[in-house]
Image (cartoon, rainbow, N blue to C red):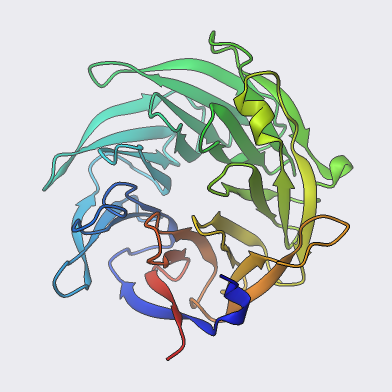
Length: 352
């Protein structure tokens, strides 16, 4: 199906109000958002030091705040991420800690607090199996935590190599390969050649190999895991590719190569980019706008290219900090978070 030929629009479904400061990040529960007959659940985190859990009513289809997690963090909660089982929520805070919350159905309890970073924790990510967690910080380090029995978390590795504030960590969707991006303008790839957990930096994607020329804010992968999109303060999105079969065979590391650069679509810093399961890339930026892109069906000799599918100006009244597609197949729900204190739910739909 060629999306470019369909007459699509991004329809605002609902504004979720409640945070009293900027909203930094949103995360869909991976289980509730995919299961039939189960209400989708969304987490949002804010400069107001809280996390809000939102749920959609199966009857009215409207969203309400089910609970506010406000007991643990004393400063901005910058990032939140659900474990693959949907049972645990990790929250990264400027107070230097990462909280682990367990979902007991009607309520959430903080079952563990991870300490170790010298200052603000900027991002948190679970690996595909839920056995490990990664965090990163303004202290320039990336930590890998092993999930043990009895709500215990053990620091398995401290990865140093970035020369500035690390903005985001993201595990590969199918393999235990970790990616980090930084204020130092680079993306680093961390990989353990064997099962001993000795993670090494196996590749640095920087300006010298067609990388970004300013702070890299966000990393996202397509469903197959053979392509990655990154976005930056340099006002571009970059698409990268790898030989995924070679990596998965365990032969050796397959490097990521630059495929193309999308520029001229935002005129302020691009803070967030996310790749949907049906291959639509969304970006959100400091120009208050959201853009959608799809791969061109017309192959060029230079490799793949991407077309602007749709643009939404004034999506928010201030910077768009986070955009996230729902993991559910086919429903095309999108959540966005902004400095205006709002979370918005959108649907990509055919114009009536």
